[in-house]
Image (cartoon, rainbow, N blue to C red; front, top):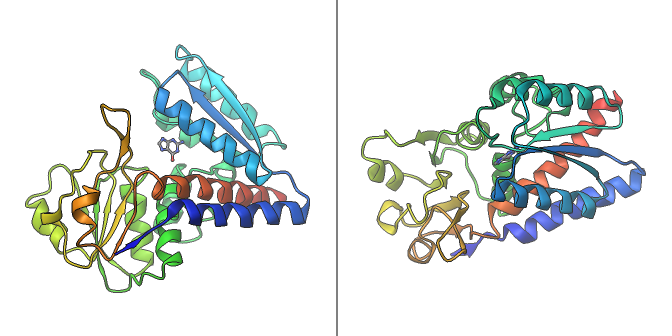
Length: 278
Ligand code: GUN
């Protein structure tokens, strides 16, 4: 079994970005919008800002109260869209109720859409011409490439059909020539489907959901889940200790996919900078 060291790979990606930014003498800028006081979102945003600093990317944080109206939020997006010194815009999800994320994501200038959540960019992701790749799925692809894991013709099973991970992950695995199945809470005989997987990617947010009896011998296990347990520790969707005996490659949680998501956000911010020079 090979442990997929996302932390190490993410550091290499960030180092590459930092060097490029320094060499070119540029200062890309990422604006992050955080509405309300969700504790997990606060931590994610703080980690994104830390990574910006490490790469030489300027970061601006817009912390808005949970009472913010849809109109106020859209007005901020308009202001950031118009600001030539802002290259990337990210609205941290989930938004507190009753805010609706869809009009907000559709309002972000597609050239500044570092999350790749704008409908135009989602469409390009499934056809061609995508400038951005969604951060978490792109981070998984980066890991597969780094460890030279061949996807061609392989059976890839994805657990979870979210817009943030499951669906875009399927698009990227199709581009890698895998045969892709997306499973979800209504999938019949989930265990049998998972057992067919050469590459099993879980993004459902259920601690230790993927057990050893669901895994084929020699499978590649990619765990996108980040679940906080009662004792405060983080754990993935995969029962790591039991599954690692059967896996050929496996990502840990923490230190697997999480750091890669942030590294790919840095990459997308640099891409956004370049798009705006054209
Ligand atoms: N919430 C959980 N993951 C993400 C992400 O990748 N981007 C944003 N904006 N919010 C998130």
